Every structure is written in structure tokens, then in C-alpha cells.
Amino acid sequence: MPATAAEDFRRAFKRNLTAHGFLIGAVLCFSFFSWYPMVREFLLAFQKTEAGTTRWVGWDNFRHVFQDPGFWQAWRNTLLFTALALVLGFLLPFLVAVVLNEFRHAQGYLRLLVYLPVMMPPVASVLLFKYFYDPGYGLFNRALGVLHLPAQDWLQSGDTAMLSVVIASTWMNMGSATLIYLAALQGVPGELYEAAELDGAGLLRKIWHVTVPQTKLVLSLMLLMQIIATMQVFTEPFLLTGGAGPEGSTTTVVVLIYQYAFNFNQYGGAAALGLCLLVLLSGFSALYVRLSRDNES
Amino acid sequence: MAERTLISPAQLSRTRGKVLYWTVLAVVVVGFTLVFLGPLYWMVTNGLKSTEEFARVPPTLVPHSVHTANYTAAWKVMDLAKLLFNTLYYAFGALAFQLVLDVGAAYSLSRLRPVLGKAVLGMMLATLMIPAAVLVVPQYLTVLDVPLIQRNLLNSPWVIWLPSVTNAFSIFLLKRFFDSIPQEILDAASIDGASALRTLRSVVLPMSRPVLGVVSIFAVVGVWKDFLWPMLTLPDPALQTLNVGIYSLSTGVPENHLIAALAMACAPTLLIFLVFQRNIMGGLTAGSLKG
Image 1 (cartoon, chains in turn yellow, cyan):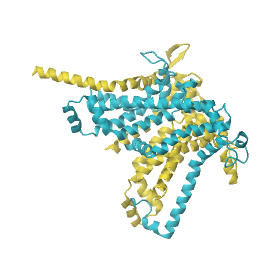
Image 2 (cartoon, chains in turn cyan, brown):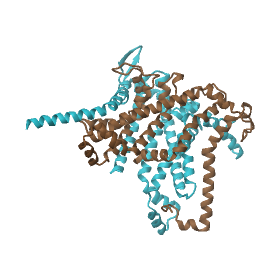
Image 3 (spheres, one colour):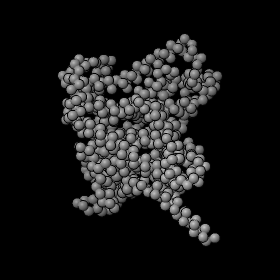
Image 4 (cartoon, chains in turn yellow, brown):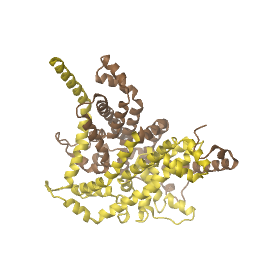
């Protein structure tokens, strides 16, 4: 009957009106501060603004960025940071979690300790590490001296600067990864270890054949998350070495983006560089989304 | 006794197992205390030393003379009260905006299902694929001159609050939780004549405490730890956050005063953390991968 059809329509319209009312605030925020900037990033990469006029320049920004010797160095530094951060920031928390999970005592205290730095303001942690790294009166060289090991230049030498940044960054961030692994380890069924023992497996083989496969999903998600996060590292090198570091050894890609945009005022170059990073990381994020979807089902 | 783990209980109950267990435990407890509490101890005590003692070689483990004046001086000179207030103001403002707008959006997408809702959700989740660092430059240019309303948001709290709402991950967590609420409960509410807002307030939200806790912790911690965005968008020293303020003043004050300031900057969150450790650690791990 037409009357009910009109009634249905009215009801559907009202329902939609309410629904969109609830949605509109977030949609506006996304439009202004997320979707529009995303489009703008693409536009900026192909534009150049000089003396107040903006024009299209095709791939010029990309060409310009590729010719910058700092470009390749930034990628090398970023990959080095990511590789070191994977060894320290990915393996170390897993090992710590495996060990902590065995303890019947003091586990709460140890968990708390690992997580403390995560709650500190990052600037405070970074400045602390700057004092520890000081080649003259720094705590680290003093500790090395006590152990009769040669003093290091830490942040002041191109060879060790990046490693120093990674150590500080691991100290600051490993707490969250450790707790996530601990939660995952709690889900490993004890019978599997028993079965492995009956087969005569030792400690390492139990870890390799039971612990790792049982936590594989969490491990791979964390690995991808770590790669995505460490490829975007900025705060630690920026604060520890002022960004560039000795001989430009800590200029990461995001530090370079920052320099292009806010030191040289070349937003086009910054955007072109950003798009390169986006393309590289999108593969990892796509994989992450797929894995976490498998996790759901 | 808890669920058995890597090492078999039989092995642990042997003398050799016991010795090994307690040795490893002792080494780890001492090592962790040194590595994670050591720097905090260094920070608090060096903040108490006189300038002369701070520079002494070799350094003193316990300060010979205690200079609490360093703390009061740093508090005044760096105006930590203001920096702390600013940070809390931005953090809890962002929390309020996220709780209202993101909860509303997630509720709408999950339960009210408007036309185009799926597309909106897809576009929101798509933002998770874009590395945050890539968006900083175009976001900065946007807040300099927001399109349509043509406002410059620099040096206003809105520049922190509004972009914080674009947290697709929180919306995703909230929506998934709302999806899991049985339809019958909501039907009962609507038969009783409750409006959508009423249902949200009196039925959905009281059931959603855990996920609201997780989202709130993410919101506050996000602002508390952010550095690049507030540094770019709040250049006025009077409006800076704790992170940015300490960084920009770090070269201008005596070193022992700076260390004292760092200790004071860490104190509030560490205290909050010690009180709420269970909720915070549980929430962050639950929310970050599975939820």
C-alpha cells in the first residue's frame, strides 16, 4: 500500500538522519585532517610553489630528490636503523618474554620494570641517554672503563651513532612488545611442551618447535608493525643527534622529510619523499592487514 | 600452580633445576633493576647534586649534599607547572573529543548502519595504511589554513584535539565491540521507546567499559608522548607541551637543574602508572593486537 511505503521511507529517512548525525563529527575531522591531507600529499609531490604561485612540475620534485646525495644516505641509514632495531627491538623482547614467562616469582615486578620507560615522556628518556652517551663524563664510558673496555664515541662518531640511537630507542620502547609476547606465551598449551619432551627435545628445540610456531601470528604481526614503525623513526635521532648526526649518519628518511619541509621550505620535495616511503611501506601494511584479518577468522 | 611452561616442573624440582632457576632469577632481577631503575635513580639523585658534585670525576653514587633547591629552581625557571597543565589540557581535551565523536561514529557504523556507512568505514580504515610520518607535512599545511573555514589553527588547542579524532584504530576497536553486543538487548531498549542516543547512553556504554578504557588510555598516552606534531603546531612557548617545552629549554639551564626537571616531568605519569599498572598494561596489550 502506498501509505505504508511512504511511512517506510519516512522511517528510513529518519533512521539515516540520526545515524549520520552520530557520524558527522568524526567524518568532518577525517575530511579536514586526514583525507584532505592525503590528497594534498599527492598534489604537493607534483607541484612547486615559488613566490606565492603554485604550478605543476610533473616528476621534477622526484628527480630533484633522487639527485640529492642525502636521499640514498637517508635510505641506507633508515634500513640500518630498521635492521638493528629488528635484532634488538624484535628479538630481545621476545627472549625477555620467554625468560619472564618461566619465572614463578617476581614476574609482576619485572614486567613493571620493562614497562616503566614506555610511560616516561620520550624527551626525558632521550635527554637522559644523551648524558649517558657523553664521551667525557657519560655513564656508559665509565662503565666500560670499570670493565677495562675501550671508551666509545657513541653519538659523536658516524660509526656508532646509529647503534646508539637504536639502543636508546629499544630501552624506551621494548616494554610494550615484551608484554604482548608475554600475553601470547600464556596461550601456548603446556601439553605441547610435554609432547616435545617425550620426543627428547632440549630447551632450544622446544623454543624453536613449540614456542615459535605457537606464537607465529603474534610474532609476524609484531615484526611487520616494527618494520612499519622503525622505517618512520624521527624523534630519537632528531633529539639525540639533532637529526643529521656526525657525517649525516643518523639522517633517516623522515628526518630528511622534516629537513626538506621545515628547513628548506621545499614542501614538494618533502611530499615526493613521503610518497616514496608510502609506496615502500604500503606492501608491509597490506600484509599486516591481511594477517590480522586471518587472525579474526 | 599455573599452567606449565617451557621448563618441565620435574626439572625445576630437582636440586640442579632449583639452583639454576634461582640463579637466573637473581641475575635477571638484578640486571633489570640496574637497566630500568638505574637511569631513574641516576636522574633523581643527580638532580639533587650541587653543580660541583654533578661534574665530579668519578661520580658519586649517593649525593653528599642534598640540594632540593635545584628542583624548585627548575620548576620555576622552566615553568613546569604550566607545561604540565598544557599537556594535561590537550590530552584530556583530545580524550573528550575522541570519546564523543569516535564513540558516536562507531555506534552509528555498528548499529544504526546509515547509507554509505560501509564506504565511510572503509575510508577511515584506509588511513591506517598511510604512515603517520608521511601525513605530517600536508597536515601541517592544512592547519595553517583550514579549507572552507579559512582559519589558522596554529597555537590553539584545536590543532591537537581535532586531528586526534582521526583515530581509525580506536573507531575500529569500538565498532568491533559494539558489533558483539546482542541485538536482543538493543531491541528491548527500542521497544521501550528509547531513542538512539538514549540506547547508547544507558545500554551500550555501560556494557563497553573495557573497550572505553583501552581507547581512553590510547588517547591520553598518544598526546602525552607525541613530540613532532605539537612542536610544529604549538610554537608559542606559553602553549607548549611538556615534551616540547623541556626540549626547547634544555640547552639554556644548568645541567643539574635540567636533570631535576626531567625527574619532575617523569614523576606524574610514573605515579599514575604505578597506581593503575594493571589496567594500563592490560589495556595496551589487549588493544594493540587482539582486543
